Length: 150
Image 1 (cartoon, rainbow, N blue to C red):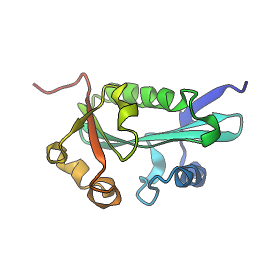
Image 2 (cartoon, rainbow, N blue to C red):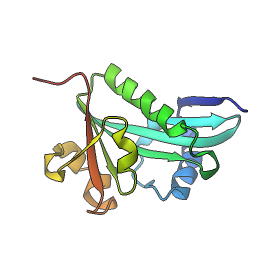
Image 3 (spheres, one colour):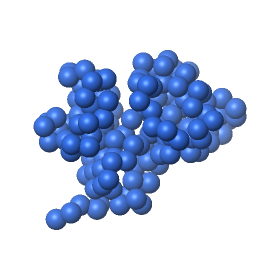
Image 4 (cartoon, helix red, strand yellow):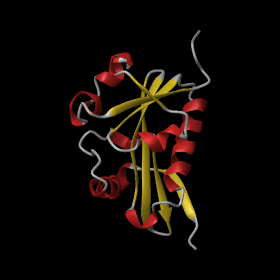
């Protein structure tokens, strides 16, 4: 069994990341420059998973969570999500949002709950994911972090 390594993505790895996201039918044309809060999961030299967090002030958008079909069901996405949530806590974010058309049940287990689209902060409403790339049937979910403002 290969060991799974989860590391921060580098700009040079963008093509790898894009090819995995394309296979998963996830958006790639709006990926942030530099991929600074994106994680790659690898077994040996093979990219098996990706997950990212885009920061908008005190909130984040969890996005681009994908695992290659041959490696699904092994908890890889979960490890990456946990990692990103821990990072978000360290960066003192107040809440993380995500937009999904298929995985809302999956994210329940990480404490995300569906929210009304109107309640989403403007910074996230202005992302391409929110405003046009994801259909209006998509579910918007939110998870509060420890650093709530009263």
